[in-house]
Image (cartoon, rainbow, N blue to C red):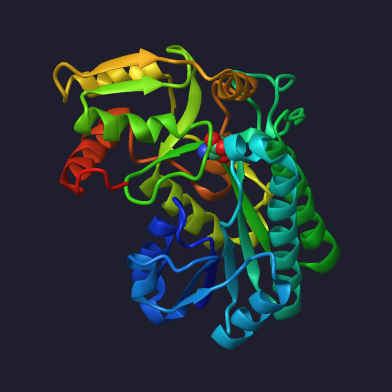
Amino acid sequence: MKRIVVTGAGGQIGSWLVPELRARYGTENVLATDIREIGGESESGPFRVLDATDGHALGEAVREHRADAIFHLAAMLSAVGEKNPRRAWDVNMSSLLAVLGVAREHGCSAFTPSSIAVFGPSSPKDPTPQDTVMRPETMYGVTKVAGELLCDYYHGRYGVDTRGLRFPGLISYGAPPGGGTTDWAVDIYYQAVEQGLYTCFLGPDTYIDMMYMPDAVRAAIDVMEADPDVLEHRNAFNVTAFQLAPAQLAEVIRRHVSGFEIKYDVDPVRQAIAESWPDRIDDTAARAEWGWAPEYDIEAMTVDMLNNVATLPKGAT
Ligand code: AKB
């Protein structure tokens, strides 16, 4: 991997991944793209406004940049996808088809994030194995299962080097998450610093797998750099760092923000989504096949999040 194109560069993952890719591979070698102008880090190097569903425009960008790898991050997440399921299908599937077609034509490898949302109520919950029943109940989950299969198909049929990770909820400061069920675990830090109070849309003991963004970015790059001959589960690997519930995280934050309070105003739609997902996924395959191991635990992440959120201008995400 030497010259890279990133779609959805202005989103929660892209705003962290692009600077890390530029630090490792050189600023000029990483072309950030997004559907709109985004400012910030991603525009501090090569940048292009690009709709990832437009295969022709993506092909031009890849050809002109002489890219050998695509990180495809543009997608609609779970909660926002339930508000407009048809659009979630169209955006997630047509952009992935465009990326895979371009990767095939230009000989690029392709990274696509999958999600714990591929699992549903009939999957074993704790632990959820790497290979198991996948019958999700959200449109986002349906697109992620279909996406994993499509990536496998392009690998098997056309030899495209497709790779992916089933990300858990990702926690970070900076660009906000784009309408997921796990967004509470980001919002809680901002509200703790700004208001000393957070009203959570999930119930107190709803456990979901989570990960701090620096680990997620490292995982995405590591799986792309892994020796292809040792990868059995290329699309896609379970990866997790820890399991988190709102009451538990509130307790950890309270150790650093005295008097911090959490209240609950449960949103039935997002609660049902969260309950259909695993409590704890088993990431042994990622650990065994390419050496995955998280560096941040809940405490280390909390210290880093609070320090960074406190130094951002008030109201900034
Ligand atoms: C979401 O909540 O939709 C995402 C995810 C778990 O993929 N963060």
